[in-house]
Image (cartoon, rainbow, N blue to C red):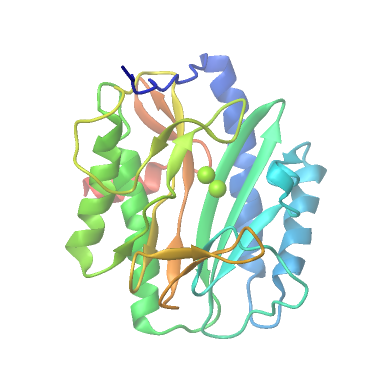
Amino acid sequence: MFKRRKPVIQMKTPEQIELMRAAGLLVGETLQLLREAVKPGITTADLDVIAEQNIRDNGGVPSFKGYHGFPATICASVNEEIVHGIPRATKVLGEGDVISIDCGAIVEGWHGDSAITVAVGEVPAELTKLLEVTEESLWHGLKAGVAGAHLTDMSHAIESHIRSQGRYGIVEGYGGHGIGTEMHMDPLIPNHGAPGYGPILEVGMCFAVEPMVNLGTKDTVELEDGWTVITTDGKYSAHFEHTFAVTPEGPRVLTALDEGREWFAKLEG
Ligand code: MG
Ligand code: MG
């Protein structure tokens, strides 16, 4: 008889969550720098240098660099690239591109992990909307991350919001995860599915939630570099991510500069 392995979810003390906030804030501030740096003419390798410098200058360690051999501090995924793009000196951003920047840092042994997708200059309205829908879906997922909820209540909140906004491809096979003393820990958090399944969330758990949404098909393929994941139809993709802690007061978004206050107020309104 086979038993499905039960995920073991690492519990954090309030003091450990403060260390995760330090890591999360460093990631959030780094992404803010990168958002301001994105413009036509900059390369994804330039962005990687900015990220590594800021993380190291502020007492952190880039968590992606060397992770299963990944060569850089950020993942930089442009247009039809969904996730895990490798920064390159030859990859020059141009007007009308969209770039997903995923970044992680370790502070005193604790991880933060967050991603944004940024428009380069002016982009078509359907891309602006894609970015909005993806970011909103992340926040709907985070809002469902309360003590007593089931894990897939977050998945369902993400999928429901995306479906309510139009016909999009919701990427499967990649998703959110537990986080703490490692970047990727149990459990996996799908970005789709029925509510009411999976472990019950408890105060002291921390997760990274990260929807990936495509303009066309949900189908993906990994490039021969062994990292970059792209859409099979070449249509553009967006990706947003935050790390949060389940607290007695609700989800505390550790990688958001304001811990999520503005977004949660917007969703309440
Ligand atoms: Mg990430
Ligand atoms: Mg992640």
